[in-house]
Image (cartoon, rainbow, N blue to C red; front, side, top):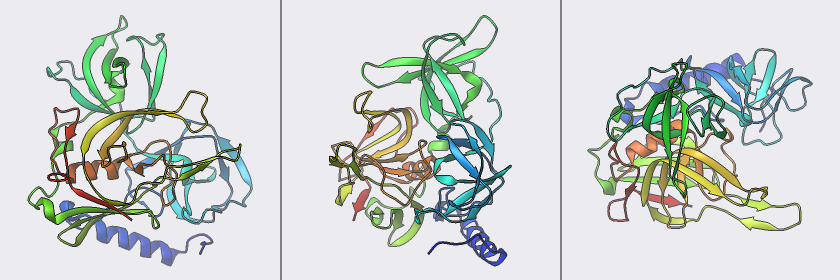
Length: 356
């Protein structure tokens, strides 16, 4: 069923449900994330980055006239989320922005963080940092004219290992990149929000391993966490898909079904696959909050290259929002200490993950 706009009565119904969930204790929260499928009326979510060039329309409908286009990486103000019409019925969420409506699939919602304080005395190990602006340049040297190696996007996580000042007095962080061969990049320090041990603190650590599990429903495209048969967390996802190519061939990247267990946790992972000219290739530094559950590299992780959950679209992994991925990272076993690039596990100590 597709909705034609949203009535005041329907809006109040959705808002009331969100408030009910928000009133639960933090460790028992069933998450109403900012992803498509839920209305988010919180004041924190005010900005959106256009992941690709997107059309802005006169009404929240695919058939409404286009009023103008927003270019890739352009930032818009999100005034509200509404339900509208779209050919893909899994996602009928549109964002109201100044001048019209744009579909949510290719808008990354962001909290508004100002310039971040510079950490001048780094701990010996460094610290974890998260990009707190729409994007920043990862450069080969600590100055603005240096080659841009990558563009790092909001929500990505990186290990900061050093800091220097440029001749103009600007501070730069050196961030580690584990992709072989390991290298480093330089980013503007005030673009990076420092993560602390508080951001890694375990959720429900008193619940025994055997009473926790994650269920991933590929048909419904949902992730649900249980504690002793009680659902405590819910988010929509985008799992693996079958890729069809222009030459008539296809590849099966569907997420493998069955009973798995958490095998490896990483706060940050540079994911890369395919050749540079491969239309299905990808090169994604700083993928946040990774929970690997197969030896072939399938993981639940945060996603910044789309905002379209409820449909299959990945290379096998289970895409969720960065906020949902961080919750899962903190809730699952084994507990991951702050000063670790990764933590290995197995079926005896890793949270069960059931895919069906």
